[in-house]
Length: 71
Image (cartoon, rainbow, N blue to C red):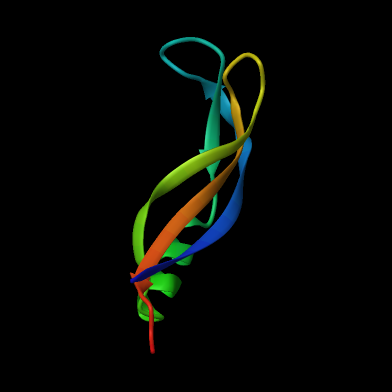
């Protein structure tokens, strides 16, 4: 049986423009979180947008981790 854990991460407006127009959106700290969770035995499996503007801009994501349930 698998168990799951979720870590919320906010996105931030970056500087400059993207190739498709509009401002770039950056995530900060995701690599550190993934490495920390991996050291605890979790495997990164993806992300889910949890807060989004009507324009499509994602404000918050949940990083999703899984591992075999102990016991």
